[in-house]
Length: 183
Image (cartoon, rainbow, N blue to C red; front, side, top):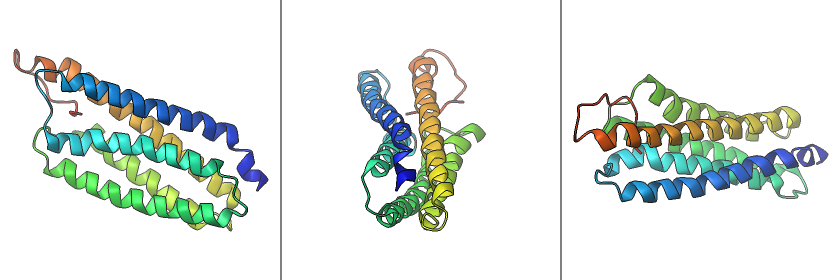
């Protein structure tokens, strides 16, 4: 179990960052709610909600990794289940992105909103599955997962904010390029 303990500072930092970003997203969404033009519900379900879920997933994994487990088996099962659940959720997000008609996603959107999320949760499921046999490699896999999700979530949150500031707010006065996703 010393291998888990060695990751303590890493997960304290990552978990704190995820928690702070969740709070910040709520503030930003509150400010957007006061804007004259509001995004549609289908766009929110495809772009904004998954970003919050991503930050919550990072926080969950960070908390899970800080539990003083007696054996790694329970943590491995929970990580594997979280990976499978996240993978299924990623498929639902991909479907929502395809079905919404408020915004036409570009390649960058597919990479960050779908591809990175699918990759991360697949790695998480595999890390949980092989944690008992390959503990060190699995711990690095879980560490990579939280960083992938955290940094793609930061990208997605920034993408949404810049879209609303530079594109959506000005869409009623001038034609715009819809190259950034709505929140």
